[in-house]
Length: 490
Image (cartoon, rainbow, N blue to C red; front, side, top):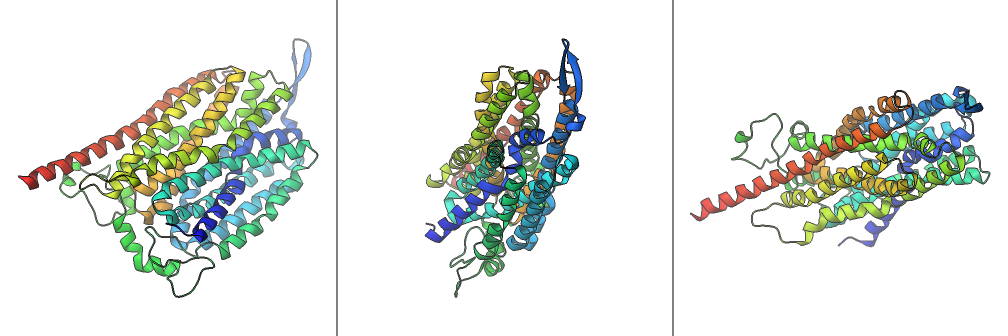
């Protein structure tokens, strides 16, 4: 069982993820404030519709959409070098880097104005990159909780999703007379809390898994092993004792059948495995769907409400409120993946194989949720969007929590940061497709996203390939064990 100190550290990490890590994805609420403050308003032009003069702000929406596209791309793409930084330099260096980047971004927005609208490009990108660094360093805290590790990891990812509601608070404060500047200055000052956690409550290097005896970190001291010492002594054993075995994508399977277990997998072999490639497809498709929905939500609501500001504000608030539920939805995915921990394993089945079996249902359910969410978003009925918002936050919580949890059970812990970063970096390239999608919607489709939404719903079905492949792989392993047992018996 874990100690009360571990629980305290776990709660602190949860609060940090909940209040700071993923505020970028509250973009829809921030856009409402930015438009009210006149950011990029010079791009709006007067147009005449039925002899009524109205403002046409398509170019303004386009600029704001590009900002979110760039920020979300940087959020994922720079996770690759950040993953290497975390693996090689440890927690303290990574967190100091993340805090400095994050604070720079919040201060840039705080001291920006409509005349300096272009400053939003680097500012949002810095907030995105700094936030994901905070998440990466906090996810390792799940290693303190043993058989509940996947549940804790998914909980933190759910908190990351829910932190998007921070910009809802900024929006509500703005409507009550608190300027955007003061709200962002407050967020910048909170970086002092991050620094305190870094030096007093977090390990200097990494939290290993499984935990060695008398493992200590943070303020705890004495004769017990520190985090860096335990990694030197036990790091190699940890890698050997906890990893899934899977055939590389460019290797003949027949050469691996007789030797299914390797003592230590290299980073290259992980990258070239079918697990990694299908997981990349699974993540990229669904992430593109979510990014396009979040990035175009404001113009989408303007289209459905015929531009009524009060309705747009109401639905924007509803969307932001549903994001708070991410922290409640994510642990269910972790429970699905951890459900095998209390069950006796089949004869000859390793822990990693049991974890993979448990992951199949999680991967499949996540795709089903995405298809349903995309289908609801494609139906141009305004009240139905409440259901769309619920399905979106549920699916997004399952997606990112499941992504981190699957990496932790399918690959060696020593490569977690690098693999996590590589996956997000490659999926970020795919997410750039959201901009041409927006151009198609605002151009040839005249602001009607129906055709693009239908196409993305069909594309989402390709993500079913991943859980199907993992299922087939697990069946093959079970068949090999049965065959080996029959051979030994005969």
